[in-house]
Length: 151
Image: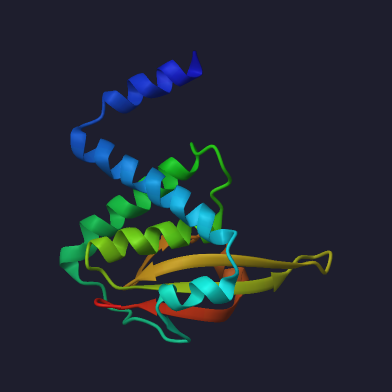
């Protein structure tokens, strides 16, 4: 019954939003697969290590950035697998790359109050945080990957 309601809701969307959601679903699945690969194997495909893209946002990209953010955030709550921060960041990076938009993937660590180490990933393009904005200020950046146009 719930699935029927979700499908009805999905098919009531305009076709551009449907395609954006399908794209996000596919890239989230692809990113979930990547998470299971050795990091040294996938790191070269993420962009230039320990570099960042410019902080200035190009006004022509604002709508695309908001759309990718919305699609990743919405669809990641409806996948059959865990779509946590790293999966979201990988998917967002690939969606932005398809649109010719630069981005930087941040990897951070922090300690919980119990002393346990935790990690977080987020994606920035210009001054806009595309994924992982929630709680990112608690984390110390330990790695960055700059995905430039043409990388």
